[in-house]
Length: 407
Ligand code: NDP
Ligand code: HSE
Image 1 (cartoon, rainbow, N blue to C red):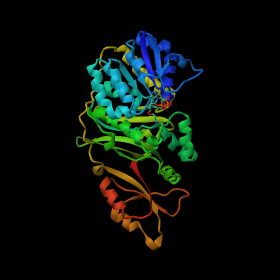
Image 2: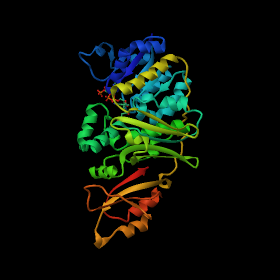
Image 3: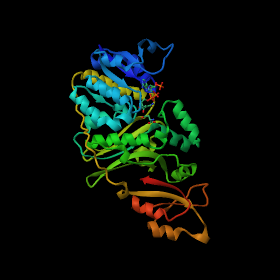
Image 4: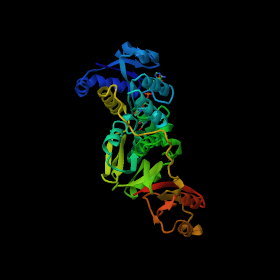
């Protein structure tokens, strides 16, 4: 029997206990031994829940118990999760986590500690909820030079964008719904401002480069400025609006960003709806590989954490190497990156025709019209460097919206 402790009995932590109970026999077959939850750590009491019998409030009880070989960390946040994880690894216990904030910040260091103590630090659930993406990157796409990752990496924002686009739902209403369903972060600003997707693309890019990609270096825009009219134009273009985390290698250097994109129907990410995430990985030999599944929520995320627990249980006392060191990776400057931009601005009519100025600034543009939208000029530029676009667009007043285009 392998004893496990679960840290945090919230959405994911309670899911981990549930998955281990419901799929007990399958998990036993996969590990070769039974997995038993010996402790659950939380700040609260859970009267009436059987978990109460194994609930502790003092982490030292878990740390000092030599029978506990694996810890599933689902508390979230950097502290005390970082200290708890570090001490567990130093004690030779393996840690499996869904905490991307911690993984993005201290992943390389914690992996090194795990290595020195013949333990494992696994974080499958930290990106893409229930989608296997970390293990495939580490263990499967290993014969390729990965040259690009493009993903819908946040379930909450994809759920919001889908509901707004398809049902005309109001932003605040759908966000509340996503919170009620357990998709959103404790502070949902992390979802809607793109910080969560930013941490996830930082983790994936770190794994691909083998060194530390700091999420603070990644240009990040959220979805809070997207309006009903943007969706009308998207429909007119047979496109959808998606928050994408992108890393692409150009001339030997990775460039990363997180921003809303207009995604055309021929892109497989176009049809990733609701809480689902989709991640496209491009390798120089394998070409495009797509990963798809539920990006947030109790059971899918817990399934990914437990898959790590299974792996940890099968490899007790043995470190599985993960190439991610603490040396900082210098990302390419976003200002040098080229994109196409969709722009909406006020149409001042014939008295003040803006078209000559638009053509002077951006060259030939593709004009777009949307049903029911008047008094606006909307167009798509050719590929243009980010810094040049910024310089030119600053010359125009009354710009309603700017969205990058990923056709
Ligand atoms: P919740 O807020 O639902 O759960 C966290 C739990 O941990 C709460 O019960 C909280 O208690 C407890 N906790 C917090 N600090 C401590 C502490 N110091 N000691 C003991 N218990 C503590 O969060 P989620 O389950 O949604 O998320 C957990 C982690 O998983 C986060 O890192 C999140 O980003 C990540 N994640 C979440 C997904 C999801 O779909 N929800 C998907 C993928 C990853 P209290 O409420 O009393 O503070
Ligand atoms: N809040 C996150 C999301 C949870 O919505 O994607 C999964 O990481």
